[in-house]
Image (cartoon, one colour):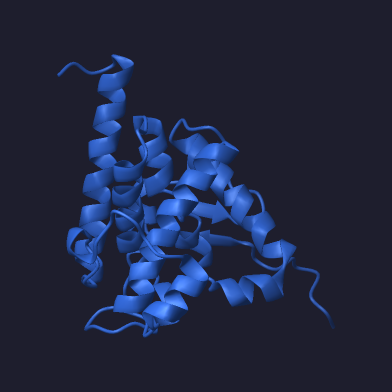
Length: 207
């Protein structure tokens, strides 16, 4: 006999929230869950050098750092940059070759999660095209350094896929893989710093 029970489409978070992947609610999104999850999701399917995985949380910090240097951004835009991979706290970091195989279903779930996350933190549901392209540029610069310093790519291979970064050097980036708890802490600290600046910028909080 076949069970009529629908398959479970939600995940329980350590905060106690229950996030529905098919219909995620902003009310079920917590920054502590995002930081915890991203700090334990490995970039490059874990195929990186070092004693620790290079986490999506650490990658997000690097991307936001680069974005801040190359774009005169508002605090809202900085938060969008920091959260650019936030849906991966639920669905993991799927490498680009596999995304192309899976197709549209993955992107649909990712978009719904992005919308819930952005609305939870009073951001537009989805970034404007210009902002998305600017963050993608910062992401590509980060990927070049991750590829060559951690993932075994030669500079020639990395240039083919990611281009040659200009004005950003390895010495200025937090690229050495961190323990998960440290990446989680730094991600939360950066989130809180941006949120504080957002409140000041909006006049809610005084200097």
